[in-house]
Image: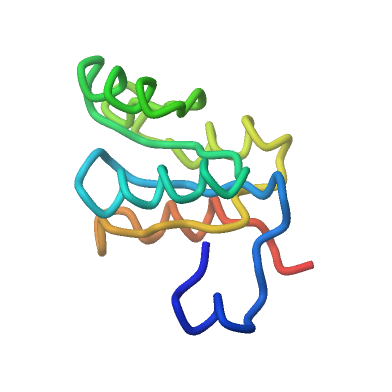
Length: 108
């Protein structure tokens, strides 16, 4: 994903890169749609089956219910073969930052 500035000459994510979005709020849904449109893989966390359905309708196939699995970073690692997500849209702040850091791919 990129900002307007990076779109004009910055680095583009590689096709097939993985983006983790948190929840089903406006920022996360927009990020998921943008990532999918760019051909990126999206993993999303959510808190209910109803919200998971919203994500599925957008085309997200990898969905983690963080209420059923509070250690959701482990699922991200499992889904990525231990690599982690290339990009994380961190919207949870102090409550999710630690797990986001555990779920992010190391710089290559």
